[in-house]
Image (cartoon, helix red, strand yellow):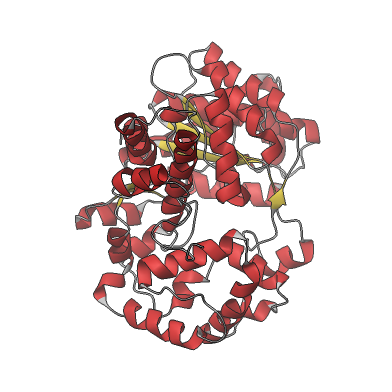
Length: 466
């Protein structure tokens, strides 16, 4: 019987162990999508407690704690840091077979050298040990990034952001590239005229121009897009419940924008057409500057109205949606491709029923210009665990080229989440190792080792070409 989380954790065969320890483990991390705050890196924040770095903002843990019967006071409320950690320690033993159990102990092991299983019995001891290390210079934000062997970080940034912290990081000479990624979702949220107009006014202020027409909106967004480009951005991201590709005319879009700027609600059809136009225009912008674009598709957000009103978004009340996506996604990509305006694109699904759909969709728009131009992205959100990763890898292997995959990302708000790259790499090596042991692929360590190194780091570095 194997020990829990030893050096060969998740590696079931000798071949898998050779691939991971000899090839995957040494590769740097190219974290091209995350939600960490660049302010923390710019100021090289030091965390006072493990609770600050581990539990604050982590809706994965909050969902687990609530499910375990823990009151909101200990999740997002005003309980002390120790009380929150104590309740998390109480929850951890109940997370067996949930990825939270693996993530928790990988992070404790890799960053704090703690090999014990967290429980109420040792909670205080582990809390104090982690906090003591967090007071040392090596455990500042930048220190943790160095510890994890991170090469590049792409944050997630709104078009109205000044990017001041990114400039500050660059000017400081920090050896890890920390670059912005363009996330213009708010420019599409036309469902709520009050929110939307307040946002457009923000955009107008930062763009130093009036925005009273759709043409002016596009001019302002393009100015911001150029500003992001000048500050190192080469990547966009869009969070969508489904793809949008309705037919529309310029007059319809102009009229819809004037209508919402006057404070009136758009009809469902007008909203669909407006969002379709915006995605198309954003795609053209990205192509014009040689960026890659990402589409994260399929979340059903803010399901609990009472707690959304109390706590706000991104607090653990989102789930998997089931809107049809194949036809509008194909139409959107085809619309851009027809005009030779389809840039490098990464597609992420949240509903696992769509794995093969996405894995075949990417093949429709490969054009031989670069390897893996259209990517089927890594397991995302509810799917970024062992089972979800395996299914994504298998779908991509069966229907595309796994060898050209740009690999894993953290998609996290925590500086301790870099172990998700290790988790992914171990899963990848285990799959390949089993294939070798079963005689399904050749035992060619040069070929397989290079493939593992490419998926772990090289493919992403070459694909984004920052």
